[in-house]
Amino acid sequence: MKRRNFITNTAIGATSAATLAACNQTTTPVNHEGGSSLPEIEWRMATSWPLSLDTIYGGATTTCDRVREMTDGRFDITPYPGGEIVGGLEVFDAVQNGAVECGHSASYYYIGKNPALAFGTAVPFGLTAQQQNAWLYHGGGLEAMRKIYAEFNIINFPAGNTGAQMGGWFKREINTPEDLKGLKMRIPGLGGKVMERLGVNAQALPGGEIFVALDRGAIDAAEWVGPYDDEKLGLYKAAKFYYYPGWWEPGPTLDVFVNQEAWDKLPKEYQEILQTATYEANINMLAKYDALNRDALQTLQEEHGVQLRAYSQDILQAAQTAAFELYEENASNDATFKEVYEPWKEFRDRIYFWNSINDLSIASFIAENK
Image 1 (cartoon, helix red, strand yellow):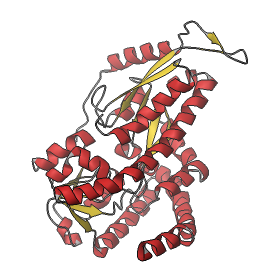
Image 2 (cartoon, helix red, strand yellow; image 1 turned 60 degrees about the horizontal axis):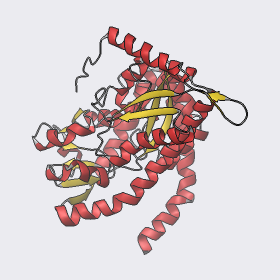
Image 3 (cartoon, one colour; image 1 turned 180 degrees about the vertical axis):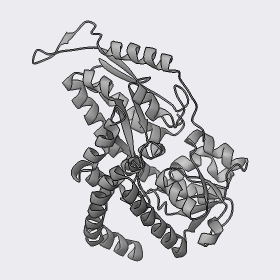
Image 4 (cartoon, helix red, strand yellow; image 1 turned 30 degrees about the vertical axis):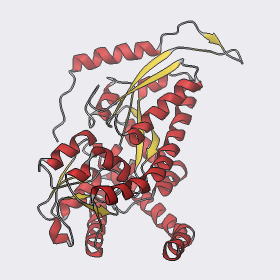
């Protein structure tokens, strides 16, 4: 999808100046315990999500609500759905340029700027949600991603995870890698690059545009998140074959992007509060999706006639081979990608070994003996 030239350089400069100036305004300072005085600050948060998708959009609202509550309303961030300030795939640029102070989006939408940004969200056959959190918070992942974001005048904070996603909606059955060739499919990030190697015409579309494209035949297949969101988007009305697993997104992280200059102007207390709010959003989104998806899947099958299908082992093997060939090629050609990929791969190998001992063994037993 072509990115709109949504704002002129003049408008960016004017907006940035106005918003950053607002950060410096202090009205009626309140003396808190300890003698500190905190200013009233108003920010705008652009997002990539339709308002109707309450759980993924909830990563933004949880963050904003908690910041407001923890500052007694003195630090007020207002979230906006995708398309209201800028398009769903234009959040990164808006934050980078200061058109808005912050945004909520997925880093892998912006791999055209730097392919290594994919690791900040998810890569094919990568990390589960809990493994992703372990890598980000305690495996050097967040430091690696922030080094990349710093090049774009942004600091990022994990603020949501959908959990392992579904494998997409297809208008016809897909049984072999040959069946994928020639399909037009909505799929972003490195998952899209892998699909291209399997013969798919991959396209990146924001969530609000997927149903129309699928329904009108502009695309033959589409992936979004999982049963709860996919039902809300009405994707079952345009395609009946629902595949799993979403091998390209086993645990995708969503981020709050913050303009670096705006961040630097915040009082230390507000920085800590915003960071704490994103922790809560990160945990809450995953928990909510896990609570909602099972019932939504049952509804899709029983009330809407959706046909659940597993990807064949042939497709999974072909995709995994193509994925790691892509990673190795990118690492050979891009020093930044290599700097993230090699320690990430080592972390992946170690944590999968551990989780095969603890999580997988008990989950497999229960699944087979329930």
